[in-house]
Length: 337
Image: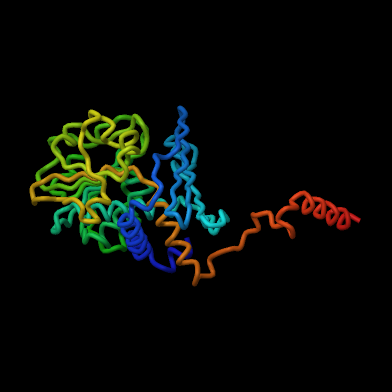
């Protein structure tokens, strides 16, 4: 947190977005797999691994919506970055804050490539833990100047408004999703309930709108009416994972979507005209976490905000692990005496 505050929240998001964009441009170098998920009636625990052949990273993350009722966070996470040539860990970090930063960075990156260039007004439906990061990312990277807030929890709306007061954004608390969307160029949905829901209906989506649907992150959870997907050009991070967890889980197997890296590299076009509806169906992907950890490692090289951890067994003779244990026992005995 101190490193992010020293760097600046908006600047940190912008730097992480640059790392994600760089890694998406070398997409073919990465190991890719849908995240390994353990689902329960209360939520989900997931592992998200990837490697570019030089570094290996994974993130542990959970999603438990009911946690907020007992004063706990819906999402917590930590991550690790390791050297492929030795297998030795290089960095262990919390990733609850880092995930919020990279999720916002990815939304802004998608918006930069898919929204109309003149887009200035964003509706934010769902004003929980992600909302302020999303607002600042779209402000810094995409030039958004006005945020229209809506949440079923009025306290969450007021919290978000209060936290963004000093950012220079024009803020409006809205009475309904319809009110929030009215006149918006961009709509970001980031609700937390693990269920099929209809946050946006087809009649709420006007020509030329860009949608970031980032609340979907598990089977059985959606935010958009399927008719919206039929009208929109849909972009995803990694199709096999989004098929399981994203908005496109509602659609037939032959439903067509485009992976965002293809737009970033210029392999395919993003938005083709000003009236087209574009939709980023974002569920989060391991390469984004890899990028965030890589950014953090680079930032820490010139920072005091790190601690050297004694986590790895380091015997004098790499073949004599047992002997190391014996010597530790002998030292313990001497200390006791």
